Length: 431
Image (cartoon, rainbow, N blue to C red; front, side, top):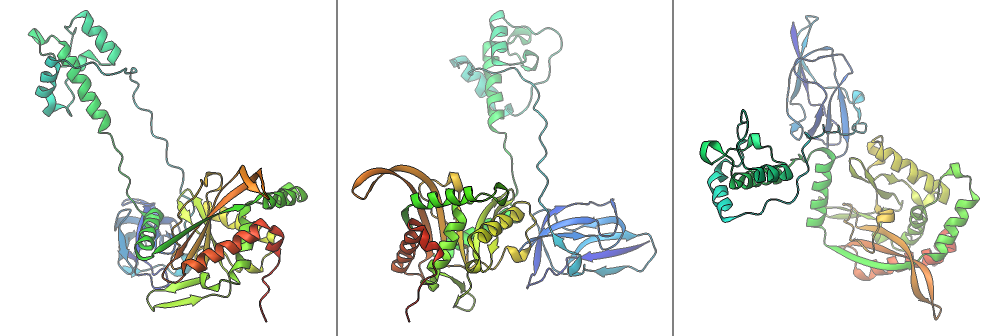
């Protein structure tokens, strides 16, 4: 038999290493060619790596959370065909985006235990007993054999507190259980209950999100600006459009209307449709508007990109946002669908709250957040009336977008949303 050393493949675009997210095989397993063996993640995307050959797994390198350099041994196979041992990496074509992870297994139910009321009141004797047994609080008392000696009152206290007398060491004559023994046992159980914790290793997409958020907040001086918008007329238009379309075409939310209005506004504020290339110290201004849509998924926050949003009609825009969000949530979005945005819109929907301070999706310089739309009394045309109000919460990179320009852009967006007919009218540029 011979061995086949499979090295971490080059995943493209300057990738120097990849993080192990999950192994799908282990030493001793027999795998077939193209069978999924490991899921890895780069700074760009999660990728499934299939087996390049058939054989038995001899060893694997790294645990979930570990980073393996490109070209380093990843897994060793034992071949049965007697061919010469080789070292190889997988061709790029064999790699594929990782699917959505399976739901976490339901933990088995804890052992049944009688309900426990409030702990017994401590007495001076009990405090002394607890101090005496404190060093052994984490160790379980040995189970007693035969009938337990204690008073009827202590049996009642043990029953009400859910304490098994057979597990309590008695300090009285002949091992008789005293009240102090019950109180120290109850305290030990309370300490054990509060000591139960779960450690969750930060790996994969969650690690990547944490790193990017930390980097953005650390390096970008955020300028936050919140403005309330009267969306009463926008809501009326939205409801009218939804009723005029068949149900199978999907319901229209505020999001495509806001994105469409934003593309109109950016025509007058091109300094907000910019990427900052920190390595070169250059601002790259884009004519095309590629709008990122922050989307919550089971794996964490992803930002699929609506490319050339300014060229799409309202229903095309709504359909594309819906399609991208579904692909992101099902982990089917390709790398191309998750990179390249020039400005991002984020919305928490019904959980939107009053205001928020969204973090900029670097290397962009602006992000627009939609908060919850609610009906409340406001002064409108000199009278107190009920109107539908929604706040826009935005953040700008104050290094490159001045406060005046940021406020002017949001005011222009507010104007479009409060007079929704103007959403469908391109900006008229001065001759």
